[in-house]
Each structure stands twice: as structure tokens, then as C-alpha cells.
Image (tube, rainbow, N blue to C red; front, side):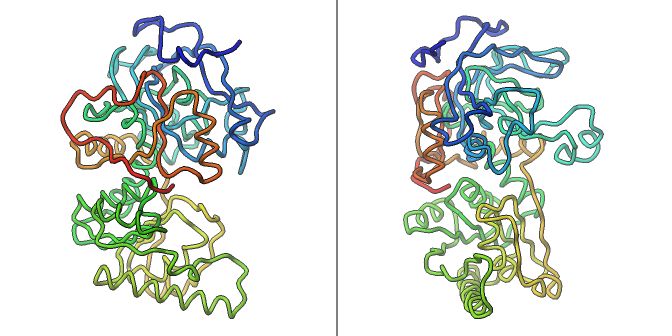
Length: 416
């Protein structure tokens, strides 16, 4: 049945009662490929909430690269993560309204306005109660390793995923920050115990993770230097509070490609040392922390650049996950490598309060209508976007939902 996207903002029921069906952008295994082909609009049954679950009417959704992977079925198919479902509704960021709660939910009620964090784990796993939900064997990223994500009129989540929606933001602004911001918060605040006076090197400082890492340094009293690939992006990170920035195009030779000859490696190492000197000139001393997510291309330089007893914290490997580096600079100078993955509900709650207080601001590039979900992911796939994209679902137009004073999002053309 054809879906009328012009009516996607309309719902025929009041909070507390679910409609029978909903519009959703759906990926199926047999059409994995380019996002424009893999994502198709379908009319789906609205899921019912189970114990400790909540159905949220999605007002706006955020676009992340994880559902480019979902569309393409690489590096693995999402259906391997949820084999009992024959469909995948993606989307790991959302703002919305609680529509129906399942048995056992007492904190939330229909009509509550919320944002959703994307970490799920089984209530029965002991790690959830005494260690960290990120250590639980059931841990999954909602809307990527699970279905029922945010690219639909309604989504199903665990009650612990809900956070109060910052009233100083519009629906689309509130949907734009969760996955990247909460990841950056855990990396710096929890994993590295970021303190006033720390010096921090941030790769991709104008990107989805870096804009939040830069702001966290600013409000903590840490000094940061951002690595960017244009002067315009450098101006943005300075606006966000960086001490300075480095255009990586001026140090292209430091990027590790893999398979270098001894002569090429010697030249690359020389460029890395020159880069380290540039970082020190801006910060006054070598960085205490390096904020990593690039992986193969930058990791040897990160290990070299961070000060003795310093920390390299990493959450991704966008240029490759097979890392090699001169380990002598690790053990002889007693540096630390720390792996980090998203955030738990407590960390998300504390981070969200900084948004509510206007201390941290989302950075948003473009807002698209519900009809633009496939296009948005294709833009990401082809690297034709210039920053964070939000999708309107239940919100009829941009700019709705803000009911309190305070700074909203920063609108800027920035990278991934």
C-alpha cells in the first residue's frame, strides 16, 4: 500500500492509544545496497510495548552513518543482529512524545516529551545492575543492532532510554545530538576524567563527535586544539571554544595508509613529529588526552603526540580498524589506550542536563522532511553532506516545540 508522506505528521489517536498502522522507512535483506534503493516507505503495524517498554511518537529523528551501513549490509548485515525480524527500521536518535507505556513503567506517562538515547540491554543481565550496561552480553544499539528505530511515526524503546526533552530546543534540534554527544561525554568525562587545565587534541573537531568534545573542554576549563580540513571549520571550532586549530591538509604526509616502505614510513614519521610540534606550540605542552575516532590513518600520530602518562581514548576507526604504531612510544613513556563505546543511561542523563542548561549546544546543518530519509543517507554515503541532518516526522515544520528560553542549536556547515 502506498504511503502518503504528506500526512505523516497526523495521528488519529490520543496519547494512551496506538493506531493500528504507521508509515516507516524500511530496509529488507533482499534489497541491501545503496541507501536510495535499500530504504523504502512501507505501512507497518505499530508495535505494542512489552514489560518496561515504551512506544514513542517520533516528532523528529537524527541521521547517523550507522544506517548507511545498515542500508548497504556492510561491514555486517543488521539482520545478523536481529535475525527474528524480517525488516529493519533504522534511526538511533529521536525526540518525541510518550504514547503508550508497557507493564512496569512508572517514571513515564503518555504525553511526556522525551529524547531517546540509543543503548539497550536486558534488565536480567547482572552487568546492568552492578557493572555497566555496556558490558552486558545483550547490549545493542537501538535503531542499528535492533529494529523499530526512529524513521517511523512510532518507535519502541526500553523505558530506561528516555530522557526529558530540553525545552529550549526545537523538535529537530532535540533529535540531532544524542548518539555523538553522549559518546563524546563518556570518552572525556568518564573514561578520561577530564579536568580544568588538561590539554586535549581533538581529531575531526568540526565533526559530529568533535563539536561536542570541543564544547566539553570549554565548559570544563580544559584547553583543546582541533584538527580540521578547512579554514571555515577551523573558525567553527574556535567559536566552540578551542585554543586553536590545525588544518590537516598541511600535514597530509602523516596519515598512515598501511603497507608503507621503510623510506615512506620514515617520511611519515617525520611529518608526525612536525605535527606534534605544531600541537605543542598551540597548547604550550603536549596534550594530556587525544580524542580519537579516525583509527588507522591517525593512530600512530596520536600515540606519538600524547604526553608521557597521557591517554588516547578511541571510539571508532573510520579510516580502518587495523592499527599499527611504534609501541615503544607507548610502553617506555607509559601512555594509556582507552576504548570507549557510547554511554550508559546515567552518563546520558548527566550529559543531557548540560543541554537543558544551555551549556552544550547541538550543531545542525539541515532539516529535511520525512520524505528525505533515503536521500539523507545517500548524501552521507557519498560524503555530500556538510554536517548533522535532522528529519521531521511528527513535527509539521521546522522551529516547533521550543517552549523555554535558552540557546538552541548552532547552525553551521560542518563535516561528519
